[in-house]
Image 1: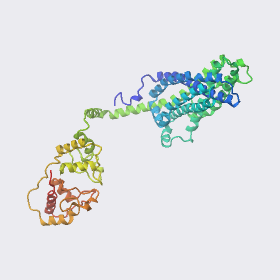
Image 2: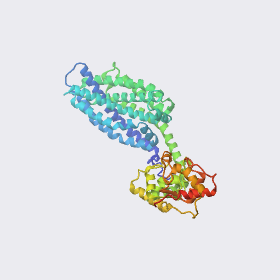
Image 3: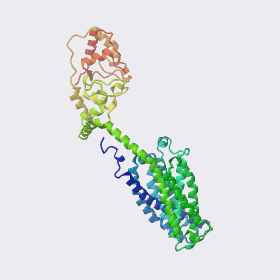
Image 4: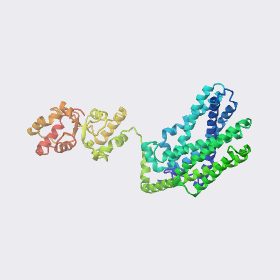
Length: 518
């Protein structure tokens, strides 16, 4: 309808700029996420390895390695804000849809991170002082931390499979089909990358003062890199439909760099072959190439979907354009409306059935089995109508309005009085004596429900809807004659059009003689 329609679909920068920013910011975030995950995993694994080996000595090196987790997690969290905001802007429809589908898991990310960080910090502090407490904190903390990338990879995987959204919404996660295996492979690939970069990071830093640990880290680095290659093969096949030359080129470069790294890290290689020089070249190549492949695949799917959403927005805007002025005027009127007055309550709660003029011809009246009453034809006691408002009319579509307090209902009654003169005296028909035939019909037929005095009989109270209490409720002569002649659809009030016109007129007069109070 205007430039503000579907605001989330508007891009603050050209798409190419957003792609570049997303690549850089997400790359920095992912790097520190991998270092953080790798540090937590290796710290726990080395701690367990030392304990299982029966070595009860101090774990100074493990403790020092785990303590680096504090700085890494801070950078990972801070650097994660930018890519999260950018992806919300660039791919808003896919992002908000999939995070809604993952709603409970997505909301669990924050408490999981809090628990994981606190427990891993406790693990680092207790690693020497209390091994069993350190074990419990480490296992629970790393377990909570590993749940977070499972949620993120699930969201990102679902974002790229829009044809799966409806099925996921209906069934939730199911281990069948293509989505679940791809999700699992992607998650395992993240864990393998965390071990690769975590081992490499600590090979450069933590092992400087403990060169005897370098061999262990090289072994983990070799094994994790080999696992990445093995996991990467079926992962590529799981996205075969999205492969093109840019993706294949990036994957090829990354695989070649990984193979070179495996060659330099093989057990038979000289120790210097895996020195900082080769790793500092090969690891960035692997990281950048795989990140490029991932973004190429993501953009190939999500960019057309975003463009389609924008086109749909523009088409909808054109379709709504003729109604813009009227809609804005109605909205402005709503803003200026006081919502506790009788007029507003009538428009919102009564008018849909009873109509603007009260004749029972509102926009929803045609769907009612028991027709809405003509309010302009009612002459009743105020307290009687108040009782109908608070109790409704069982057996009809007339609901109770106990959600409004007494003051608001009194204002509504004022509106009914002003609009329809509902509480005026009962109109008196032209004076003439009521015939004996009409009195016989009333006493033998009408009084079965209405009572001889106009009150509701015990039988009448069993009816749904029950007849009105004519001692406190009447209709204008014209409306009363119409109801007696044609009946009231949906109720037991049958038509009496077979009676003579004079008798019908007399019955209408009788029905209006019982009301005693105004």
